[in-house]
Image 1 (cartoon, rainbow, N blue to C red):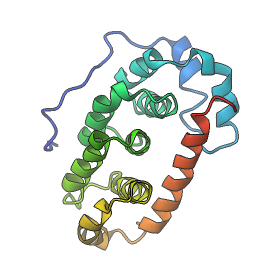
Image 2 (image 1 turned 120 degrees about the horizontal axis):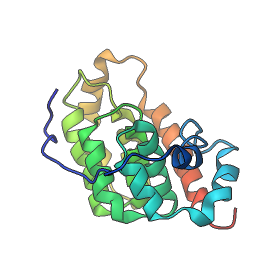
Image 3 (image 1 turned 60 degrees about the vertical axis):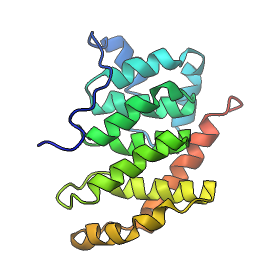
Length: 195
């Protein structure tokens, strides 16, 4: 399947990640919610080693697990130099399960460009009723950012959102907003060094 973002490119790893790297940086984190009580202690063990190079390797791997963790780590250490790559990965939506983390990271960065990635995502994917991707998380993140920034981007998407969910009875923006708010609060707490 092709989409409007097939022409976008991003940095990929030249080499495969080692089993040791994956054991250290991916396995303890990829299936654990950011707000889970076990996430912070696991992160604290590695916090002094976590840097943008680790994030680069994770985001450059073609695997939803590594990319999800890389996006979360980018948010935690405020590694905004990967904003374009994360935005591109969100727009391309090549793999399931990673998009929600890209959305959270872009919302954490909260720059004009990161917000534009969310808007571009919604502009395209709310029109694709056949693609049940991360539209709910993107809408909820936009709502969260509107509250934080005093903006009103969400108003421009409500009608399209309502049309998009007509055949999706279990999609609920209020529930998605609760989840995103909880995750954003956890990311804010995890980004502090005094855990």
